[in-house]
Length: 300
Ligand SMILES: [Zn+2]
Image 1 (cartoon, rainbow, N blue to C red):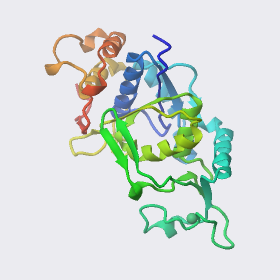
Image 2 (cartoon, rainbow, N blue to C red):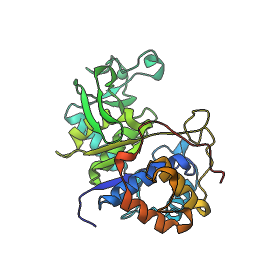
Image 3 (cartoon, helix red, strand yellow):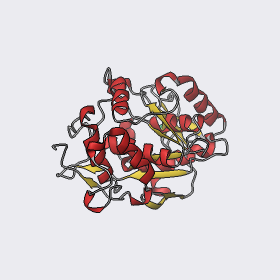
Image 4 (cartoon, helix red, strand yellow):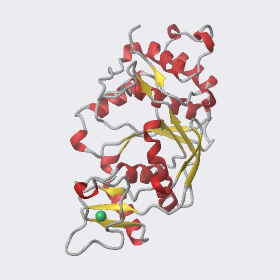
């Protein structure tokens, strides 16, 4: 099974416990990697300490294990990667692809994309607060394996922040530095991250040493009866490991992987490992729906 060259990943932030929306993302990326004989990595995006919850990282890992979603190699913690991000920023600046920006949030409040104020140098007497990546002036296209052909024109191409004014590394920079470093070439994640794809593709062009991510697939969002995304903000209930077989079946159903009518081939009573090996054998990315997934909650 090894040796296909496919490397996928799941990259949660330790800001709370996993919920059904996270299970959809973890399960889909895991099944896609295993079905293609690839590797599946877990990376903890712990770069924003004020938003993090003590113990959440360990809780996430034990929940993944309880749901049978085992990973390859050791877990990477982005908080230990400060030097690599600093090196990447230095390289971007040296190549003329990043610049210091003195603008405050207030100054940019009326702009949908960065207006270029500091691009040719910071206006007199001010210091850089943040650093921004210079987006190329061209439309970016990609083939999304779930959402279909995508393109981002100039009006969407923002010179985005790679080092924040509060001194923390921006998600955009860290995710690409680590994807490149870990050899990731398949990104299967929630559609709420789709807007970040063009910027990440442009960063790949500079940091990727001639490689590119290859597979992109943006999963439909899980929404409740009121049409709100399942998230910590909408008080999504955390995953309970003792309900793993039932919740895995629910997730596979939502992902379009169970036969119509839900009858027959596999049942929750088969247990976690049988459900997962069935799911790997039968995984079909082209059956994952593009639109939002409605789920009313975990009451069985
Ligand atoms: Zn600026």
